[in-house]
Amino acid sequence: MTTTIFFLVLAVYVIAGGIVARFVKSKADFYVMGEKGTTILIVGTLAATYLSAVTLLGISGQSYAEGPLVIAALGSFGAWIGTLLAVIYIGRKMRAFGCHTMPDFFEMRFKNKTVSIIALIIMIIGLLGYGVIQLIGAGLVLSEVTGISFPIMIVLFTLALLVFCALGGMYGVVITDTLMLFTMLAISCIIAPFLIGQAGFDNMKALGESIPFYWTIGGAEQRPLGWSISQFLVWVLFFSCTPALVSRVFPAKNDFVILKAAVIGVFLAPFMQIIVFLAAGSMQIHQPGIENTDNVMVIGFIEHVPPLLGGIGLAGLMASIMSTASTLFVLAGFALARDLYEHLNNKKMDEKQSLRVGRYAQVLVAALVCVIAIIQPSAIYWISIYAGAIFGVGWLPTVVGGLEWKRMNSRAAIGSMTIGTLTFILVDELARREIITLPEQIDSLMIAFSIGVVTLVVIGFCTRPNDYELSFFKKMKQTSFADTTISEFLAKEDGLARLKKQYRQTMAISIAFIFIAAIIWGYFFLMLGF
Image 1 (cartoon, helix red, strand yellow):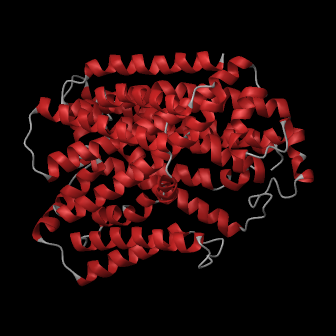
Image 2 (image 1 turned 45 degrees about the horizontal axis):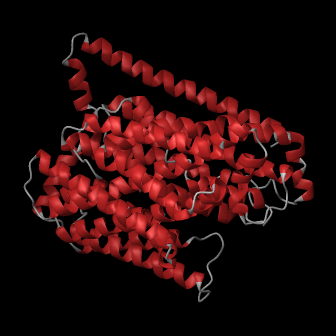
Image 3 (image 1 turned 30 degrees about the vertical axis):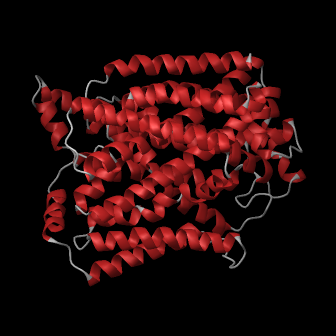
């Protein structure tokens, strides 16, 4: 049944990707879905990034071993703050300036090839490193479960990704992400609650007696509060500037779609993760003593839920891999085709040529990823250590400085991105090799981020922006996010009434999800005795 469901779900995604590809007629369709994304589609592609293979494997394993609150208490809520910043602040602003990719912002803001190249290098390393390591880890688990050899599993994933990445571009990713979200929601809404219910809240509460400190923020390892706070900050920094989230705003139909997607997305970020972490904790009741904790949820899917739910759970794991991988790889392809080949080389191409280059870049990225994943080189694990954090230290100070500071210029951007990224790698390597010892409450990402910010401010005060940088900053400050949306609505028949209706809908959704969140988290607080 597991293998059958696996192939059925894979077939659904491939067929959907093939159908969606027929709607791609221009490079605007390919890169930003022609800005036709509705609320459900933007929520779908946004939320599909939350339940990654890292969540279902590594962090769930930590929740099983140390306690669900170690990451859930502050880390997941750092994720929703980061998501809010990514969508409402950074993504919404970049979309208002006409960006189709995040590197567009660096090019528009500074008009400096060195800045653009450094930003592209950070993006490609970060996306490929994080994506490939997910593919390798989850591919190993699923190949063991399904009986399909690891190389064949990776090739299947790659071919499926090619269908909706190379042919459909952002159109394909958004549509298939939304389909995948329903499979992933089955884990958070049905399978994880089933595991929690079978274990029983009383038995789960009693784990604090057999495993001391299991239901504390410090967990069974008694991590200091400072460590938990550092994880909160790390998740905020990582989520707020990762292209996987920010780029989700660019296909949105209008500003109301962005606001509604942000409200729902802020709710789904902790919801989709924390329920899984609690279910991982419940596995201490179902099957204590699991040594390879990364497989905790997979064991739960196979051995502790009905076969149909188990098959859906594994399909959800597969969907989480494909959703994250497709997003990361399509953005890497965009960086190669649009930002590097077309823009930096000043290539003048018509619509068909641009589409062709974009698709060739997707094929190149897919082939590269497939080969790296099959070879499983140790170097990719080294890269993956930095992939998740590199956007927080390499991009975030420059992006915020570029958006808000009049003195921001290309030299400050180059210094901040370079020194911040290199500092993170250096400090992390020294700590990993035990040459230096960091306090538990201070993460290497926080150190690098602080140094990146200081570097930016010092260089910014010691240098001056050029005329172009000053004029673009002035243009940014005069740009209103909502002007385009308001103009579009007012141009229609009964435009004012439609505009008011959208405002009421957005407010109603906000209030409704605050109410839903209060009920859900209140229920778990009461049942677990917090």
